[in-house]
Image 1: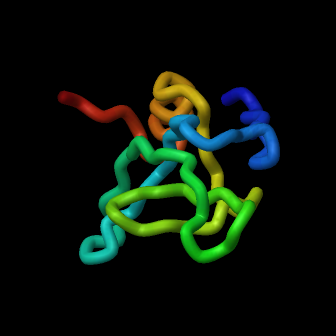
Image 2: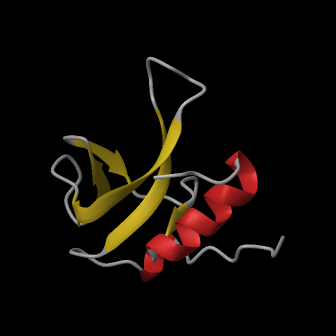
Amino acid sequence: MELYEQPQSSSLKEGDVVYLFYRNPHTQNVATVQQASIVANPYEDGQLSIFLYDTYYPLSDEFVFFTSLEEAEALYNDYFGPTYE
């Protein structure tokens, strides 16, 4: 398994798309790769947020995010095993 180099959150700008692992809040053993948008934070002027499922999350380096779906799926498969469609 290769070591993943995450881009810094400061390299993102409004309108960018990122991918992240999202755990189902009702079934903790279910995780998926989800697409999210980088948007202006409506609660903090001049700050950015990750917008996912109608919720704004303050953008920080505490989130593990990917700039490509291929990277997200590769690391997801390393951690959770392959998925089948």
